[in-house]
Length: 231
Image 1: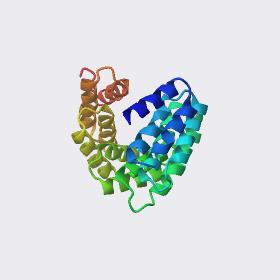
Image 2: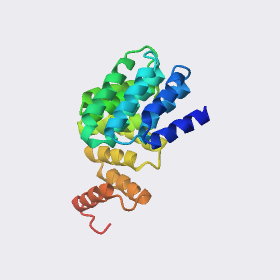
Image 3: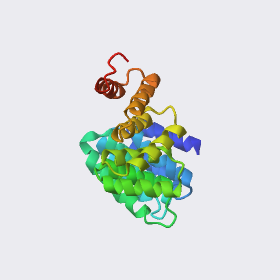
Image 4: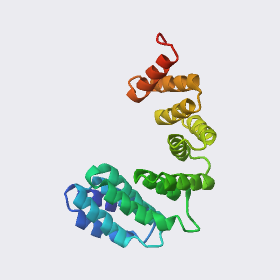
């Protein structure tokens, strides 16, 4: 298996994606391991046109009833959308079209709902993203990324701010070195009027990342507004 995967990667690097896809296609019906690893090779493919062809070739060989395989196809489109800005909307729409049927399956996983939320958020569908993140957390409550993402959407839309605070606090507690989670928490504290906590949280970001401009600017603004120019 390792030799086949290595050979496929070498073919892709040599711009021989069609040969690589043909080499791997027979294995995609055999196990989730192949259905996971093969779509992810899209990150090695050169250019948007070749990436589209790779994902389409692999998708054609992945069983339609494979939750893992279809999830990975959606994930490949999602990553391609963020890698190629000129094709972002088209590729994210492809991701949405693949992930949507999976969300209706009785065996839907937290990861599927998290992906559905991420895709919806990227396509500027906050209501859809909020619903998907909520369902993901219902399936598996211990997901700091889903907690953070849901908290961020709630605070930016001024919805359920107490819930946003609880979610953001749990995300930070679970991943205390992730500055993006502290950023969400600081925004929540500021939104609910807890300015001292917001300042302290932004300063925690700067402790972890002293050149983080996204934390510097609001820290300075909040300190100025609080008359604490010398802090």
